[in-house]
Image (cartoon, rainbow, N blue to C red):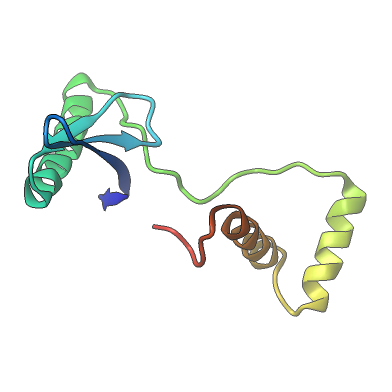
Length: 117
């Protein structure tokens, strides 16, 4: 993964063409980039993000924003109370307690550890 201005890009290598192809993830619009070397790829990624932001600005549109890290979750009130109790028992806020457990869950599934940028 590559990151720039909060946007993320995923990259694949085309062995036959000997070129890296990338796409910005997490946005509705299609934003791509490519390069033959890592330096070319990074430059193209940055230019693609800058071009995307300028294109949106020229059209008077708001660009898709990278995820803010906030989302609303509705749960049963009984479950809400129990989660508050459990987080309090651990001496943590409900938000931090749930975020920690979600990170652990994702880590178990994908073999990751720690927050991702």
